[in-house]
Image (cartoon, rainbow, N blue to C red; front, top):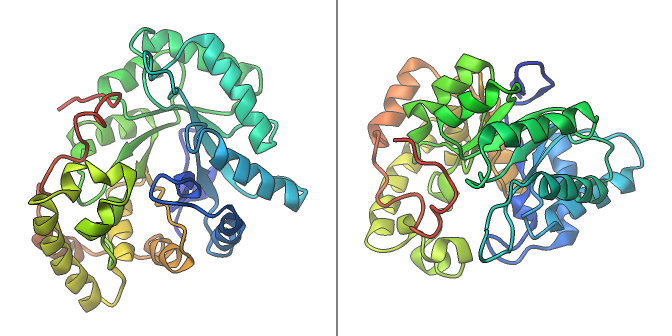
Length: 329
């Protein structure tokens, strides 16, 4: 497993982390009893970075991780990131007010059962609060010893630079994969410029870059994908046709499609860390192998020949799902 520095001053983590949204019902019913097996397997495979949020199952993901840590009875073997800022308030879906951030931080610390959170993200920006003021609040948590580093999720390069001028930003989380390459239009460069990690979520394209992509029938049973443009007709049929070509290439190269997709993401720069999520050990093994696979220039040419820039049909989000992330291109 390749190792990467998380932010300007460490710590060193596995290049492939684990996205713990999978411990909730986001992509269908989750089984809490399976979570410990997945966390055990992560350690066995050399995965040392966990990514969660207080919004994942409204604390459920953090609780599952905390219960596993308490059962071990020792220091956490993982570098843990969690997030804050998404609420259930229909009038204000995002809240970056200082009192809200502080209250939710204490709740996350309690659920996780740790003294300090390694990386604390603002999950979504609340435009009622300037990013400089929000960063000052987060910097106060660092000074208080409650968090070790600050991150932002789904922000624009301009916002990243504004925040970093107030306090070092260790990481920015954004969707990044062979099917979603928008971070290449400024965000990846801004992260490299200031020394922040670009933490790529959905690095296998919500299964479009795997050997077991979702069918239209399956996608319609998953709440997030039901109205997602890439998983609706006519887009899904076109995307599955591209998937078939990518899977054939991966097989010709002797690896699983998910392995190849992860290796491609990590090849894009030393600042990139991938956080795929899954409930299945077999799939976890596939993505973990991507963290050890080196690709040649010829390999990259072959991959981008079957999945050329802009190949994906449909937007990555529906209009409703686009509320919150900052568009910058």
